[in-house]
Amino acid sequence: MKNKFFVILIFFFLFSTIYSESTVSGIVNDDKVRIRDFPGINGKILENLNKGLNVNILGRSENRFYIDGMNSYWLKIKKGDVVGWVYGAYININNTSYYSLEILDNSKFANEIDLNYSRSIEQVMLSKIESDILKKQNQKLFFSSSDSLYQRIAILVNNKQSIREVLLPSVEIGISETDRYFILSSSELSEYIQQNYSGLISISPLITIDNNVFFWLTGFNQLSNFSEIAIKAIAFRITQVNDTTISNLKKKYIIDQVIISPYSLFDFNNNNKDFSIFLSSTLSKEIPDYVKLTLTSK
Image (cartoon, rainbow, N blue to C red; front, side):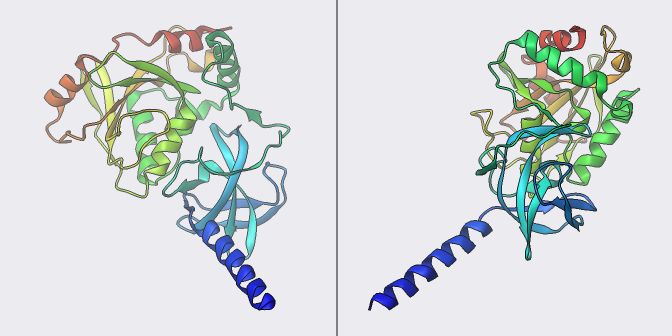
């Protein structure tokens, strides 16, 4: 009887382990994505993964790390018999958020910038951190026209990849038809979009309304960690930067404001009237003060 009890207990433990590993899955969103033996760019490469592969996600690093224009967690994954770490920007997670994953590593890594800052950090200090990063950012990630920026984002969205590389470190988020705004790490926004790629995310054409250039994404079906509203559409405004001490940003085009909406009511072929109403009580006509502070900090 005692032996039977232990057999049942062992079976239950094994079943629980298998089940827990299969409850969180993700899809590789690029080719030749490296699995490493520890969460860092100096980790030994165990295997390369190709786009479209499904993997089990076991947990994440405690901190996000800035690499090649992106700022993401390292994810511990399992593919077949291989267990290792993959940079999270290359994995689209299903059925949960990146933030909610179990923390399996709290290391700090050399040569990788930790931007896991608190939302409560003083604005001036946050702006200095972001300004330093932007000065080091690769020139190819900045765009000389609104159309070229839009085309890059359209490629990333259609390929179901992270859009973090084309965003400032933080964005000002407005809620449609209100005067409510808050500051959000761009990583949280791009990760939320990635979480919804398992559905049907669509990107609108680029449009101009009252000298403002916009596009938007629709098709969201998951709740976010950063807003109480059920997001159905996200609009992005593109603006040219003129006043900045960051030389590689002068005259370039950026996303300076993002608006989230609980309504999915836009017809891409007949949108201007509804979209203008949607923006009318939300949109700031100027570059938000927070973005000005980021771009002019020394």
